[in-house]
Image (tube, rainbow, N blue to C red; front, side, top):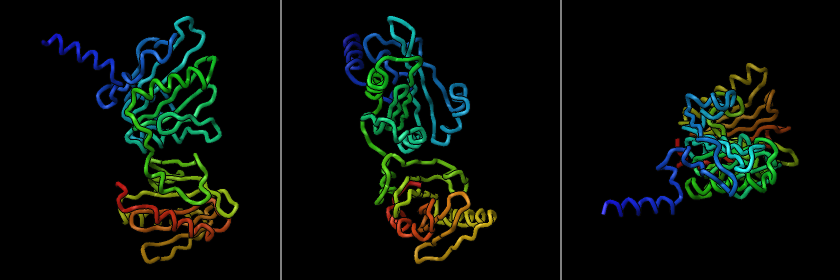
Length: 303
């Protein structure tokens, strides 16, 4: 009886896709993604403490997004080794974190790929995110077929091993507005727009009255933290010689200023959120959009 159970278990493991929750990241890399392609050795695995050994200089970009582990391997043609494909899977902290690291590489002008939650490709690379995983697939040498051949086949094989679903972060809904430019959304897990006092939040490009500007939403841990964003930004601006106009509102406060770096800025604060527009010719031109964005931020957003 025990032998029968073992045989059935083995058959089920072959018939069902790998579960990311029940396996290591390196096991999510298929042994082969197409006929004539195979791994060159075993995948290499990396943790937060060793990621720099693989992508020295880029590791610091991944860590704020809850990076947990990664696995990478090269695939070679069994008929020859003149070229290959390197596939890497990064397990991030959440779906939003996976989007955040993906969006930091995304090229809106590149060909979009219908894989995972979102993907893009050119002749030498393909990237996508799915669930909490970010996947980078790159060529080594000139690979015939490029993005429409082996890169796509490898991406599809890896996608099948990841948790199923094409869900995108619901936080992207907060950036929807008239004139929003597709594929420009970004999520910053820390240091939004290069300022530590802004913390974490999201941005997107928007066409507003003929101007290409940047919408911003900032997620704070508390109402007091949101107040500190205004206070710290105001101190920074005054130190740069700018004169922010801050006034109390019924449910928070508003700020308008000509920022020496981001030109005209209009921000609004309510509860534990800050929202606004940057890159304006005139700060007051962004006030209505700031109010619209702030209205999208629900009280149920997680801390």
